[in-house]
Each structure stands twice: as structure tokens, then as C-alpha cells.
Image 1 (cartoon, rainbow, N blue to C red):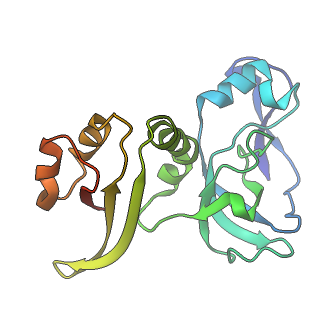
Image 2 (image 1 turned 90 degrees about the horizontal axis):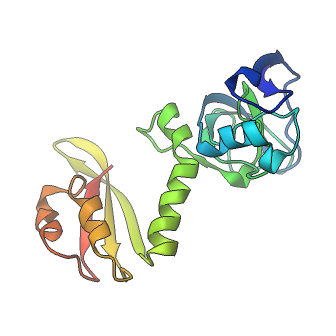
Image 3 (image 1 turned 90 degrees about the vertical axis):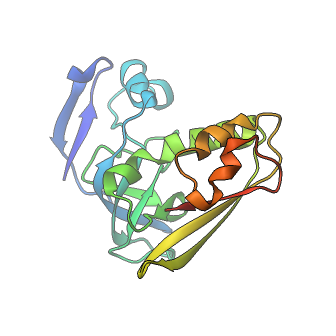
Length: 203
């Protein structure tokens, strides 16, 4: 397989494409054929400073999406052919800038239907950051329930987001909700959300 590695710290010029053996999954791991890899600020910081990974050589990349190719012994969460995404091994080396990557199976999730590979690979670290900002820092609690319904003869997914304690920062949901809530619930974003309010969005 091919991967992008580096043997020195520095700018993009230190990255090089090399041939490497395809990794094999150890017990409870899966082998993933990479279809997209995300790039985040942490990638270029590690590329230039070493950071978590120390001195080169190493291969960057944590956010990844792809298809399960092989199961390690005891891995039962997925089947070959499943589309998955995640942020394996962070902050240790995951080496996602490669055609294949291994990952502990519990550090991956199935890609939701309708989400492309590029979008899935861009989601893990950015999504975790958003969750930490809203839930952990802003004390925003979310009760999310997803169900499939039929609308105009087509099956779609609906998510009902119930507002819990908003930690004194209710304007966050007002901003988030304006472009995403279903018209039936539009009136809820024209005032400050209250605990117990809910929003219905289409996914």
C-alpha cells in the first residue's frame, strides 16, 4: 500500500509518498480501507513540531473514513464491507494518511446513510470539539431521539432535540436552530429557548 510519511519536521515539503506493508489487525481491531482522511490543525502542528508523536519518522492522520476489509480476532461490532469513520488511537499514531489503517473497533462508528466519505472523515475531531464546547463548557444538555418516518412517500430520518439546562447561554440553540429546525417548530427560535422546548429536524 501507499502512505504519506515524513522523516523530518517542517512544512508540507517534508511529506512523502512511500510504499509500505499493509497493516494487519490485532485482536479486537479492524482493518479499514481508507476512502477519506481529515486534516486538522493538530496535523500540521505535529508535522512541524513533533508534539504527541515525538521525532520522525511517523505518519500523520487521525480522522478517517473507509470500509472495513478485515476483522481481528474478537472484533464483533462490524462486518467486512461496513462503512465506518472515527478518530482512532488519538493522540497516539494512527497513520490515517494511508490506503489502509487499523483501528480498535470501539473507536469507530458506522457512517450514517446519506453522509459521504469526505464529510464523515471531516467530522470526528470537529464534532468532538463542538460537543465539548456545547455540552461540557456551556453546560448544554441534549436529549436526541432519531426515528424513521415517511414524508411525501419517502422514508426520511427525523431527530427531535429536546433542550435541557442551557447553562445561562440559551442563544446558542437560537443560533444553531435558525437554519435547521423544521418549519412546524420555527416559532421556537424566535424567542429564547426554554428548558423542555424541542426542535424537529430532518437529517
